[in-house]
Amino acid sequence: MGNRDIEKAWRYHNSTKHSPQSISNDPHYLDWANQPLPFKIYPDLEPIKLPRDVPQTGVTALSAISQGRVAPSQDTAPTLRDLARLLHLSAGITKARTYSGREFYFRAAACTGALYEIELYIVCGDLPGLEAGLYHFGAAEFALRLLRKGDFRGNLAHATANEQAIAHAPATIICTGTYWRNAWKYQARTYRHFGWDNGTLLANMLATGAASALPTKILVGFIDAEVNRLLDLDTRREVSLCLVAIGHVAAAAPPPQDDVEPLNFPTVPLSKRELEYPAMLEMHSASSLESQAEVLDWRTNLPQPSLTKDGDIKLPLLADEQLPRDTIEQVILRRGSTRKFNKNASISLAELSTILSRSTRGITADFLNPPNAQLNNLYLVAHAVDGLEPGAYAFHQYQNSLELLNVGSFRAQAYHLGLEQDLPADACADVFFLADLGSIFKRFGNRGYRAVQLEAGIIGGKMYLASYSLGLGATGLTFFDDDVVSFFSPHAAGKGAIFLMAIGKPKTH
Image (cartoon, rainbow, N blue to C red; front, side, top):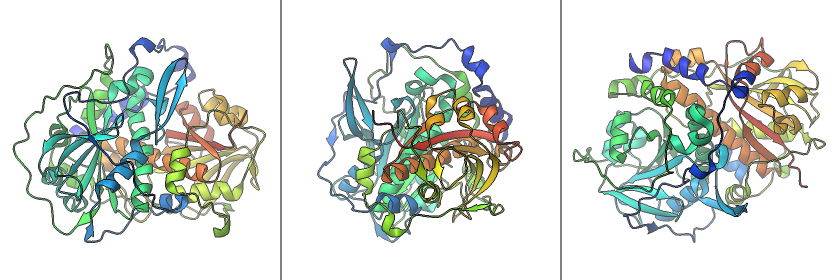
């Protein structure tokens, strides 16, 4: 059965739900002496330093995140400086802070627990400034390390059943997830976090690609074993999650190379000891694709956008002259995850509408049918939005409208739903992501679970950028699964809770 044995996805989802009982009964504590290293390092390979003198694109953040896609042309190969910009603004170190005598390095994209379990690899042909090869991106040194010399783009084309975006991409970035680096804190729930953390990183990468006029496409459908073997991954520790085609050239990739031997390059241990969570390994295995036929099935007959009924409240957008002019680079470099919101502040309905609209204008991916299909449904709890009555709402992205579900002040409920944290209670608005997992599993099999979590992370990442562009704050949060669904029911009955974004004005003192 493999990917079509969807009971395995249901089992993982249900077994990793948070509830007040599961939290209170969990004896887990953070072993700080065994905290994983936040970098993958190949000590025996020489780093190839990436250029830091990369010019800015000058494109505004709101424009970059809302483009959704760049039409392919016959000659859009990234230069080494283009790759440096993409890597720095998606996974590079942007800030360093010292806490209790320890130095912490923060990256360009938000990540659960600031644990940075997503690794990036590049497969490319000959590019201006970079020879054909397979490279690993080392964020610690802002450098590449050559793992395989030669052109392996044909191997990726084969693994994706000759997906044209990959076959004609001069470069492809492969995103992987490292189990232990995140599971040290979040245990078996880490497989959900793979989607969230990979997604926020991709939101930055897609926006930077759009600003650089580089076409991009996300591929979640591929033969897992072939990509993992190319990267020489120990799949009990690290696994491939998605591919991102960068650029487009007329000539297709050369045939795949057969001599993909194990590399056996040593890496620095993440920590003194690692714990394994079988539920994650089982979920990944159950959602793996084993043949080109399965890959082709993955990306055919994609679900059409379901045009839901129009909402009660039409959302006003900020006028062009009101939109901030901050560039995508400026916004990414100042972005953080808000630690405290000012519960006495409010945002305007036009600001909230602009965040929602700009974040949901479409993603170019092999599991979505353009122009703007979406697996996740967005629900809101509005606390302090000028021009909008406090209450619970459903968002209809195709009409940019809200459907009123329940009127009232729900700060206490938001506090509870957000794992009894102050952030969702003090925010101006909370955006809950819910999805019809039954329909998703029926269409995509277990692998649909990867897609819906990844999409939530991408949309959430866009909300981060839109919020910070407007001078606001935002943070991603976890939640009590069934209580979220119950709160928004009967409208949300039968759906699964996927993600939560809190938006508001940061508390400055």
